[in-house]
Length: 241
Image (cartoon, rainbow, N blue to C red):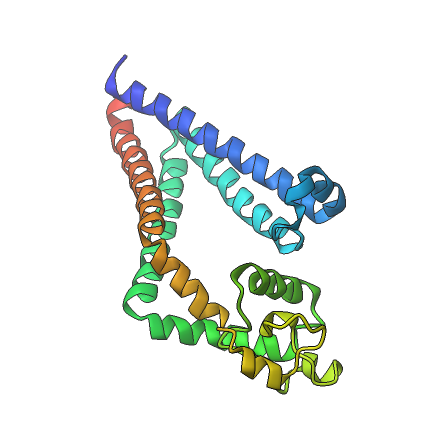
């Protein structure tokens, strides 16, 4: 077996796995979005661990769709020895890789800038959409319950919000550490629950090695995929001759 044939076979097998993984995520995402009740019943005791919100389904559909597309492009490009498909596969992987590197640079070197971007989205959402938009509400409730935090910065994100006005000055229960059913601004100030951004940043710092290892692993796989696809692309002319 020649080098080209071996690389081609590895490319087909690797992208077949990506394609199957994408189909699995896509099917699960559709299932969660269409019939979330039966999915949660299947999870049993794990159904209370932050899987109750519908955006999990949307997330799985989006990621699954991208993986299916990449798997098809890579597999068909290698199998059919199509320079167009291989170049498209390489381009998509390259764009994803550059976006990941750019996001990492912004998050690490310009954390205040990244915080500003996130705050520009999060604060208005908490002020106007929390409590009225189901997806936004469930997403924030799950985050605040799991991370043990309140709002993006702290409880002040909810002051003057639509949620506070409609609930007679009450804030989300996560903003208070007491067991009282009512949580107001006074109790929230006394509880001093940290904001979600600060808590998540602290969690990331505590698990920096794990996060860095996962990011490095993904980067290596993406670089390997680009090298293999470009190798096949560049040697197709020799193959034809």
